[in-house]
Length: 438
Ligand code: HEC
Image (cartoon, rainbow, N blue to C red; front, side, top):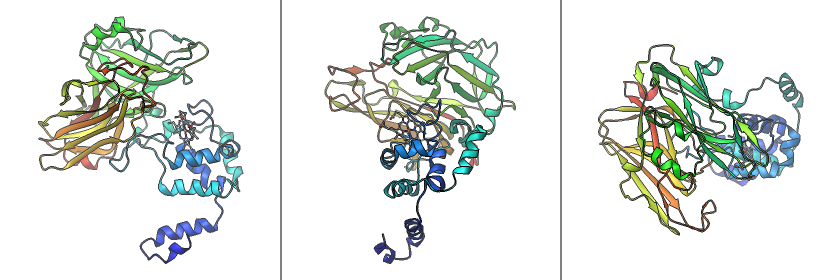
């Protein structure tokens, strides 16, 4: 480190900070606790979904080497999208400096240091909210508001104690007599211990009621899968991504007589546990000038069909949508695949050949499927084509391959099939949109 001080002025700022860090001791209280508080404690707290707490010195010090490792490889905090490709309002991740600081702290022996009192006081007040509620820049206060409509699974579901993952569909009527405009949506897991993730769809056909309680691998699903949804993905929930708030002046229409479908993924449990999860809808209080629409890239847009991943093979599929008939401002993108997915990329090519970056995931992670809400509204001009590319690995080299023995896998909703889908929320473009922070 000392030798590098001769390497010129360009890096002087960086060097100064590294040198000063090298001289001073890195302590938990002064340097590490704030990083963990901001980036980890949402999930790693009592009642959170992380497997242990990381909100006090003893628990953190016990796992310091492990923490150094998972942060260095950027496994934690979980955020699969490449932040060099696009920035998101709901992104999480450590900076290079923060990662270096953790490494250094561990190398120096994971010292506690001074400042324990301040932290203890904070704890005593007991009012710290999970970052899932407070760290999200896009909220603009909806979390302080009462929801206008709370829709809950019709009855509690007892998740069996098979010790296996459980996937179930639930049918949740809205009872809406007229259309409403929604400006924010929150998902509240009924039982945080077992709800792993969930996907909410909207049906207006009135034909989906029999799906209530159906298993995710049921052969009876097939006819339902053929009914076109009004909204394939009203909201996709994973822990730590509890709500979405749409930009000011925009809103999503939920039609009269809509029915919601909750697709729930439950973690394995050794004891029977019940869940009755809810979705909270916040209606727009001001007139909605721009209605949010969905651009859904799905099976039909695959340019190299059929969507079939033969046993013991890898496959790459492509989707193409467009050209767009108007300028749009994209709000969010939600890529979707199952266990065989490895990478997922969505981008636009403008008529001038420019790139519109939606999302790039180099390590697809089934467990962390998120609605990526762009940091600023993303303008995509008329005439652009939106493209997607996803790679799948159906070999036994893929440790996540759920099929033993390996077999051909085709398209389908069930977790024993695969999917390729990207849902983009957007509004028609208006001048200045590209400067609107979400
Ligand atoms: C959005 C929720 C969430 C956030 C934020 C989060 N974690 Fe985790 N973490 C989890 C979950 C869930 C697991 C268990 C499943 C897994 O390993 O992926 C986990 C596992 C871990 C593990 C064990 C990994 C293993 O292989 O068993 C460590 C260590 C860890 N987290 C550290 C951290 C640190 C340090 C941070 C912050 C820099 C952090 N986590 C942020 C949810 C989170």
